[in-house]
Image 1 (cartoon, rainbow, N blue to C red):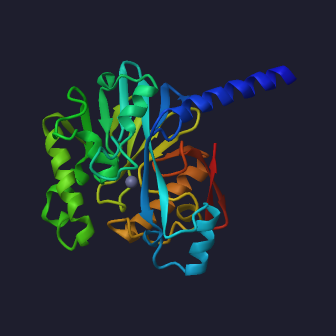
Image 2 (spheres, protein in one colour):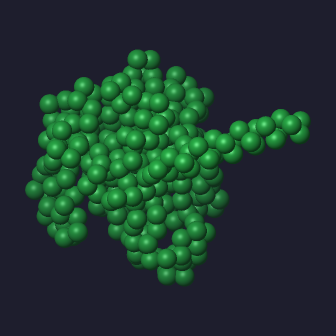
Length: 304
Ligand SMILES: [Zn+2]
C-alpha cells in the first residue's frame, strides 16, 4: 500500500515536472469519458481582466469577499480559458478556438497545447462556436488570416452571426469593444464558405444538442451532451467561479445584454443543480469541470 502510494506519488511528481519543463503550458490536458463521447479539456492560456468588469453594481465589500474567496485581491485577475475537444465516432469536435495571437500574450496557446496532448489538429472535423468574442473565435485564423483548420465544418449560432454582421454590432458599442467587431468579422469571413448556422435544440451529432443561452452575447449558445447525467459545456454564461454562482442576478459588464445574461445564468444554474448535471465552464479554474449545488437562492461551483 505504502509503496503503491509512493510510486503513484513519484509518477505524479515526474509527470508534473515534465509539464513544468514545457514552456507556456498552463496545465496538462484533462480527459474523461461521457456517454458516447471522449472529452478532453485543453488550456488556451488565460486572460488578464479588470476586476471592475465583474458585477459593477454589487456592494463593494460583498464583491471583494467573493473575489477573495476566489484568490483574487488585485485590480486585475487571471481568467482561465478552457477549450473542450470531443471525440464521437469519426468526428473530432472542438468547442471554440481560443484567442489566437492577436488578443493577449497570455492566451492563444491552444494549438501548442493540443500538439503536446498528441492531437493532430488536421483531424478536427467540426468546430462549434459558443459566441463571437475574441477569446473564443479569434484563434480561427493565423497571422495571415488563413484558416487554422481548412477542412473542418464550423457551426455558428444564426443569431450570433446576424448580430456581428448587422448594424447593431457597432451601435452604442463601448470604444474598447470596437475592435471586437472588426475581429469577429475577420474570423467569420475566413469560415464563411464552410459555416453551418445553428439554432436552439439543433443536434450536431447524436447526443450533442445546442442550448440557446443568450445575454452574454445576442446569440451565445451552450452545448449539452447526453450521458448517465447531462454534461453542459458553456462559454461565458457562467464566467466566474464565485460571483456567477453566489449572485447569478448580478449584472456584469462583460455581458452585451446584462439583464438577459443574468436571467440566462439563473436558468442554467437551476438546470445544472436540479438535474445534477456536469459542467465545463470556459473561464472556470482549469479544467473547468464540476457540479453545481443549490442552497437557498444561491449556488456553489463544486470542482471535480
Ligand atoms: Zn470568454
